[in-house]
Length: 406
Ligand code: TRH
Image (cartoon, rainbow, N blue to C red; front, top):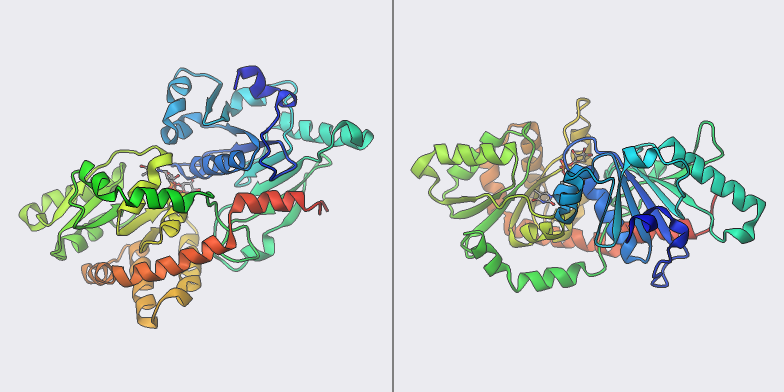
């Protein structure tokens, strides 16, 4: 995609796959912190591309995105306002917001209520106005979403699929929530997810050997926040004398886990701590598929862990109002039905709560790890519910296509 094409949407024709009357999509992404905002937006961009749309991702932090998508790293590091990876244009929002007359796409996705640049809001309004004057000149009515954060809480159903009005312009956007019920948008799932998983599983042993892990041993993937009680987690791993590979993601939490285990010397000889480095997002699933137990965080790794169908210890994104506890409890409650017995669910919930609250005891972690095979069966049942509900991006397109514009 050339730079002219990146800006001039009218020159572009999407290979529409027959899925959507929409040809183009613009996704706006503001990074609050860490990788989750960019991570979710990149996955959505790829899904919309796969469904036949030409996608631009406009972000205030191309540098963060470039950690997930290494092929744009060089251009971003050189300060380029535009780059392109896997058929998706990545635009620096500062540069984009200064354009005199950007063109509005057919499908517009503001993520996590990040607000669109004013020039772009005016561009949507202009396009709608021009269409009203002459519908034949523009066969598509642009559709504007706000895609919000994922939560299992009950209120989400009431706020999903609700219109919001712009304070000054004749614009409205549809609030769309990912979620775990039929009255929400579901989660992002690639059409070929299971095929890629199956292909990987035939090479799982080699993958683990490549990370200096014994594939016969249990494997834990660890990705958490510095605020989490990492040392308590390490104490639990040290106390349970079963051989285990520990794949600790880069970052402070992983560093502290490694340090705490190293400090235990011979007491930790059963633990093989490896630091796989930051994987490109396209390969991130491999770390999850290769592991038996997943300590993950935030939103995107949380979703991917559920798709992988593995036992999860979820570090929800910590907020000052303790909303993270409510988020965790809501999710744990929805999971109740997939466990074989109440005692399993209670143990799973207790370990997750203790991990989040910072009072995870070695006993609880040990019991959780011992129960991992039973939890894995429950996790497989849970992932079936996600697959049955279907993909968020398809649901967004279907909603936009439904014609209910008011
Ligand atoms: O990084 P996170 O904590 O992200 C967030 C942010 O805090 C954000 O502000 C908040 O809104 C959100 O959580 C809820 O965790 P998350 O969401 O799991 O995102 C991590 C991303 O990083 C995800 O896309 C997977 C990716 N990743 C890789 O691609 N390779 C890796 O090696 C690792 C460790 C992660």
